[in-house]
Length: 156
Image 1 (tube, rainbow, N blue to C red):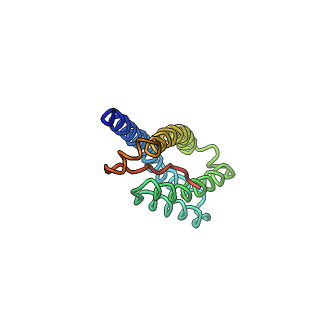
Image 2: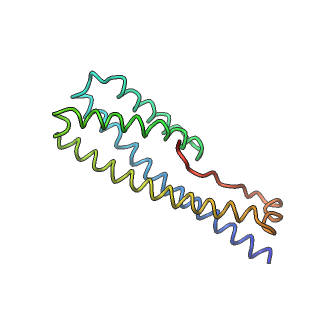
Image 3: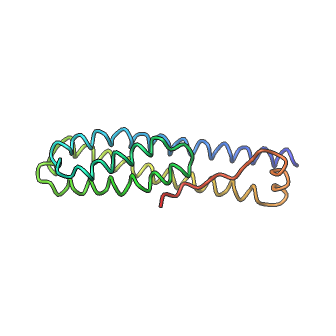
């Protein structure tokens, strides 16, 4: 019985790692798009230097984040800064019609959707895993091993 319980817990833990990898891929994709977006926007809204720098600073912080918690904190800065710059681009007459900017915005929109769905899936699996760790008799086995709860990915 203990072996079956332990195998189930390990299976769930591995699923959380796999689900996190899906989030990580999508976040990295977004991080690849941000410098292109900023360069395209900088040509036309250079007077918004501070807003562009905020996105780049948040982008750098996000790239340096290693844990789920650090990534969630970094994402709390990236998303609003990016939304602000996209709003500025929409208001600018040349940028709102710029083909490259439109492609970048569409790719970012699709990536955001993928991040959203990947985050929901990860949080669901991590929550299931965490509840499994806390339930009896699983919690006794967990105390003997090196299994730790997974943090949920919840940017503020």
